[in-house]
Amino acid sequence: MLILIDDGNLEGIKEVYSKMPCDGVTTNPSILKRQNKNPIEVLKSIREYLPPQAQLHAQVISLKAEDMVREAQHMRSILGDDLYIKVPVTSEGIRAMKLLNDLNINITGTAIYTAMQGFIAGKAGAKYVAPYINRLDNMGADGVQVAKDIHDMLKTSNLETEVVAASFKNSQQVYNLCKYGIGAATVAGDVLMGLIKHDATTNAVDVFTNDFYSLVGENKTMLDV
Ligand code: E4P
Image 1 (cartoon, rainbow, N blue to C red):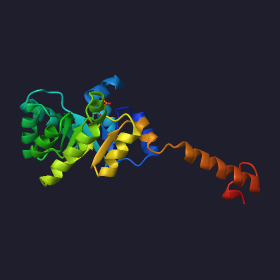
Image 2 (cartoon, helix red, strand yellow):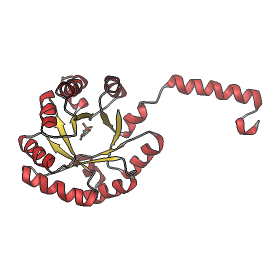
Image 3 (cartoon, rainbow, N blue to C red):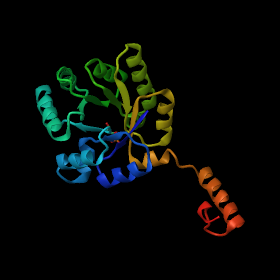
Image 4 (cartoon, rainbow, N blue to C red):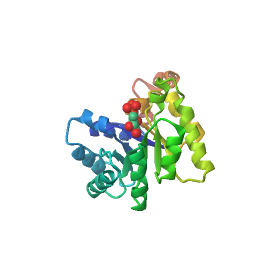
C-alpha cells in the first residue's frame, strides 16, 4: 500500500518524510486554504522538496469539464507531467476524466462517498479513486467497507485503477484497508505517526535501555563498550 501524506504544510511534510516511509503528498483546496499562501507556490515548493518518483496530487477548482481540462494542463505545465489531477466525481467531473484520460493525464477521482462513484471514475480513466473514509463513518456509513467494495469492483472488472483511501482519523481505519490490499492511503501526519505508536513498545525499549545501563553504565551504548 502506498502511503501518501495528506497535507500542504511543507514543514509538516518534511517532518513526516524524515520519520516515515512515504510515497508522496495529496492536497485539496481546503488543505491549501490552511496554508494561507499562493496555492500554486505552495504546490511548487512541495514538488521541489519531494523525491522525483514521489507522487503529488492536486485538485482542480473549475466546475465545467472543459475548464477542468484547461486548469489541469496549466497545473501540469507548472508542477510537472506526473502530477495527479484530482477531479471530484460530479457529472462534469466524470466528463472531464474522460477528456483528461484521452490526453494521458494522471487522474485521481475524489470526493467519493459511494462505491459506484468510485467504480465509474475508474471506468472514466482515473488512476486512483479516493473514498472519504472518516467522513463516511461520520455519516453513519462504513467508510472502510465502501473502500473495500470499490477495490473489489475495480479488480473484478480488470480495471487498473487503485483506491487511494482518504479522510482518516485513526490508525484502525488505515490498518483495516492495508490488510485488505488497498492500493494507497493518504493520511495526515498525526494519524500516520499513530500507526507505529504503542505503549508496550515504549515500555520494552525502556526496560532494554535500563538493563544495558545497569550492565555497563548510565547513557552508555555499544559505541562505548
Ligand atoms: C483527500 O482526497 C481528501 O481531500 C482528504 O483526505 C479529506 O480529508 P478530511 O476528511 O480530513 O478533510
